[in-house]
Image 1: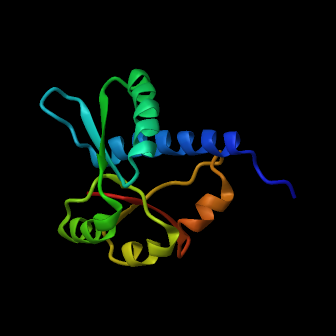
Image 2 (image 1 turned 90 degrees about the vertical axis):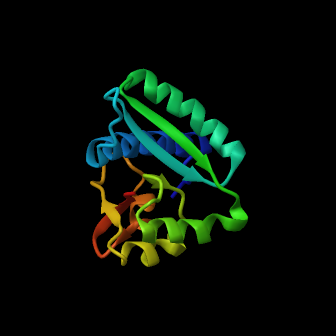
Image 3 (image 1 turned 135 degrees about the vertical axis):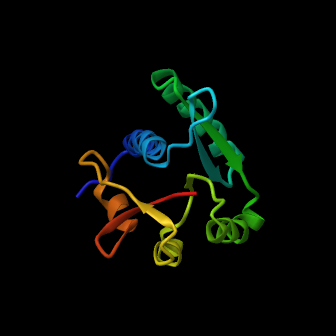
Length: 139
């Protein structure tokens, strides 16, 4: 079995994030007074955040009623602040999480199940599926 190319995986990641953003926008309904929906994304890497901002700008051009805000948190405090924010209901709508931490969040009942998409990389879907449910974050 051949391994997918890095460019294929990167494209799949961008599509996955776009689908998650659209789903979060619809399911979470974070509308502002202007009628625009705001979706927040938390991660810990500023270089990766710059790349995400580029893809989010393209997403916003296609979906002008949705604003995406990127929240970069220091890796040193990322998991402690994430745990606190999720427990308190104040976490970002979408956040980076290693599958090693998934059970601790999925079992709390504080995450939002999301539908799988046929275009997603099956191994990624499998990593973030617990008890037959694919999980996403709600704030």
